[in-house]
Image (cartoon, rainbow, N blue to C red):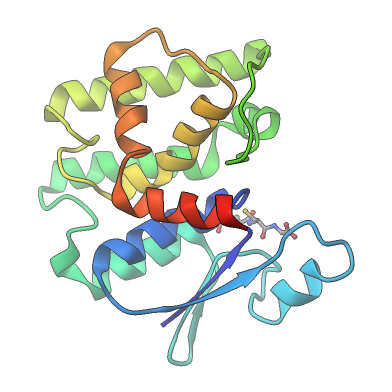
Length: 204
Ligand SMILES: N[C@@H](CCC(=O)N[C@@H](CS)C(=O)NCC(=O)O)C(=O)O
């Protein structure tokens, strides 16, 4: 398998399936495309991706060009990795949480792009503050229901989807005002898989 990803400092959508693929333990080749290079990025991505976006997973002659679809594929191909919770109700909640992230939180994403090299204190708009309130509500509700340590108990694709959000909370000094949410953010940023990604990003 080959996972085509964008610059590790910025590429949130690449980070999510990369974390899931690491959790499977399967060997894979990593192809890195440098984003934001006016002369080359688009052409380089189009060599791999029909949508002109990364990430892309290649498995034999199959090409999958969306982060959530890649995670779903990995969950089916590697059932032993338990990338989704085993219980149907937990799995439905994990999918709802990942889907909400995949299609939502536009204000936070636009105003606070992931930058693993950034540390600042941002003055957030009301729209982004509303996104933060919703995230805290979502996280604390699921953590209270499962008992943690991750949203549905064990680590799942839902947690992969919120790991880039955790980096934004840290980079932009976003305070949650909620102890469970703060602990969850810290936990996402302390997984061995994320730390490996971060090491690569900071070394680049
Ligand atoms: N819905 C897509 C979004 C992918 C996306 O927006 N990728 C960005 C990088 S994080 C990209 O390829 N941008 C093109 C560019 O920067 O040239 C997914 O979930 O995979």
